[in-house]
Image: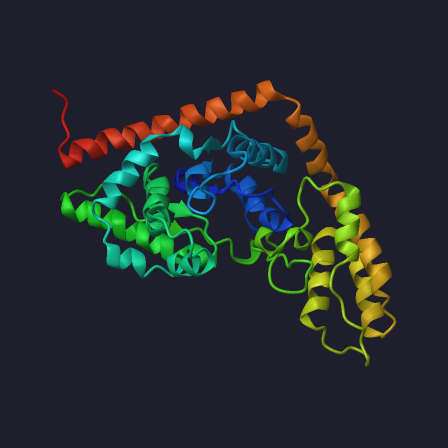
Length: 338
């Protein structure tokens, strides 16, 4: 446990409800969130407003949000320790987004790398929500006056813009109101999980077969793992592993025992590796590793009353913090009641 002053730091992070949580999410973020909830004042939200920038007419928005909430809980987040809430349950976020947009400039938003990327990915839907995505992200963070934000490399520019918008507000209204949120660095604890298709990290955008989801049934896991990309095998002892093979070993490293990993590593180094056997073992270990999550997900799915209670509790706790911020921001800007 950290010292008391450190334990009081406020941390904010969100995830979009555009697909199930996979092992990459678990090792990349969730496992760290579970530790952080014991040491910090944590707000973890489901970013349903954000999802509309890329999925403006979602097929089942409520179902997607509910699934992510269930998976958050199944992974080990505790609603008594952390505040778990749905972004749209806290309308104060939208109001702060409006205020911040008044002082965000078109030029700086257009220069944002993620905006340029999204224009290329969805040229048929370049909406203003995409342009002002960094302002909404800033509102999510500043509404709770967070001091730490766990972000991946792709979000660092957005966090920098959050600091810009917060500092600009402070300067314009001559106050020291919003803190400067810093990136929460997990350092050595950050594990990058590769996908099964042989290229890059595990993710939903790479297709269903690339990711192992926490909710996947055993047969689905077995099929995906057996289709994982490999090569024709090593040609000389102790040769360097190409990326596609390194990926399989990396997955084995996080879900299998050290003995299992060492056995197949020796087989590779001795040029005796049989990838079929390795993948069969990896599938068995993946199924065993994900079993507790799968069981909890299935149990929670049938407990509507508990899920509703968690959502209500999160809404109340998040709104309490957000309402205080909006009340003070309105006062600073000059809004007064008659």
